[in-house]
Length: 342
Picture 1 (spheres, rainbow, N blue to C red):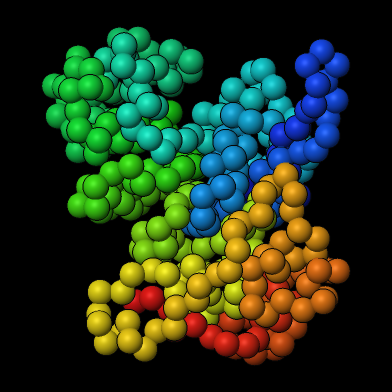
Picture 2 (tube, one colour; picture 1 turned 180 degrees about the horizontal axis):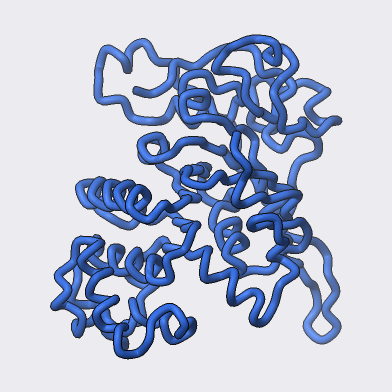
């Protein structure tokens, strides 16, 4: 793999739980992100999937430095951005932008589209002189498929899909190298989702972008991603190329997720085994010992409660040319295989 443009090592974000009114004392912590390692190569799309509450959005906010990590490092071109502040952080943020999940709340209703898309130029005036900003904003609106003449309209005058295009235009304003997209299509209709995904795909080629694409819809992630990381209770439990994850998942959690994806072909549905997980997702404030998935896993044994599995290529696949030879945090990667969706 080429040299990563973004490297994340041992990333943690814990929110303290306190007790008391006057003299507050910490009695625990919500471990939203709890030891994430990942790499992003220039020009690729890294998909992050997982169910609600697994820490995906917190990870996104950490990557763009909207949240400060409890521990760990985020290296952008070899520089640890978690240690930056002031002008140094401002300069790096120009190259790492974010597209937010909800297009209805991420746009200021009191600002026109021109002001919203052009606001990054107020923060980074060196990118566009004042006399050129209106033209640049109109060019961006045209690039994302909106009428440049809509520059003086307000967000409430646009549909959900159009609002998300405005958010994408704002993210592109500073010509970043990396865009972190936090579930950018989850609030949109299915037909509009396809339009936005195709737009992101087109923009990646046009602007040489690298994406961290966060979603809970496995079908969308497979369509747009080069590699996929599966997240559970604050950690990456399996990561590999899209074909490796979808054709030969080795972690039980990934297998369960894939078994739940709807399949339009009735013949394929009949031959696919559905995995129904028992119990609820544990609280991130009270994570199980050892493997954090063991309380819901049909493969769990005594070792799973005692030993934390490492995210690495399982020993049984290291010398085998197989789609299963990718990183997976499971003590027992062999076993029943689930026929993947689609």
